[in-house]
Length: 212
Image (cartoon, rainbow, N blue to C red; front, side):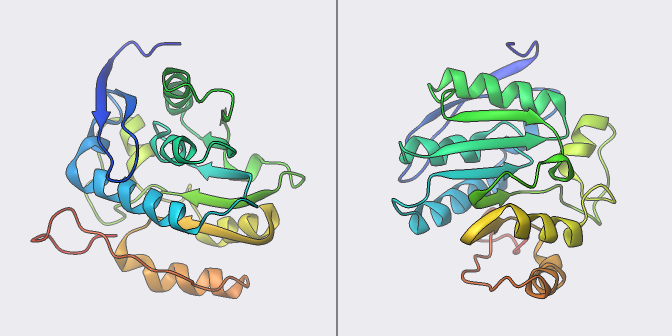
């Protein structure tokens, strides 16, 4: 279904095709700010640099508007993506955006958490930009709070364990999280057998501090 309240937005991506992305004005308007655009660019660029012909399917946890998955799919025609989100509006938006960009045959969105996925599901890589800003002031709207803020609903320990179960042999995890959480996340994933292969620090502009 077409969202009732939305803005048509074209996000020009360096070395990526332009995508038509619908963004709900009452939920994800903050995802259009410069910092989040930089995050989306950095995430997709890093993933694209590491893909090869043997990689066929990936999972995105917390799809939001679906922009990251759909930017990757637009560059790799043989890839398929599954996206999940605990927010039903995000699922509807990402599904609509996939249809709007001609990607619906290769992109499927589901209203679910990573804890609800079947162990039989296997992916070549997993990407995740989970709720963030642990120490920041929470937004008053419930949907924005769910979409933007990391709290007890997102547990790194259980997520790392699930990634281990869902990944095929030699699979990878790509994540975005607050920079001050790096050591904690790194330790947890190391304890589950993951090895750090690449690290990118992100800030909105040259003059702003590193945040992710």
